[in-house]
Image (tube, rainbow, N blue to C red; front, side, top):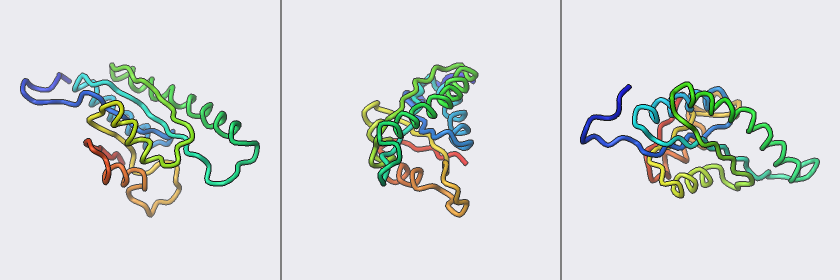
Length: 149
């Protein structure tokens, strides 16, 4: 694909929120494609939420395991970006009390003009068409949000 026509503004910085689920990998594919098309910077973001309850093995071990797992599939995100001819910067944020607030704060700090996310991630419920994170992003984001099924 070519860059946007003269006078048409494309995206410059895209945040793709990923959680390792199949739908988040599809979201990464779309984000990488858009980044290539618009010549945008691609930022892959994973949020490790603070546990709501005391965790067995301690908080530090919990976060270390979550970070280790995220690094495994963040490599897949980087591979998706490479296949699409773009470079993705991967970021893992640990200990967020609100996943939605953490994504929105990151997007604002990075001056993103598009957030891409999946409809639902690792939550098993099929009754929820748009997950709570995606809904929160759509409702509260100061930039465009693309939700992928």
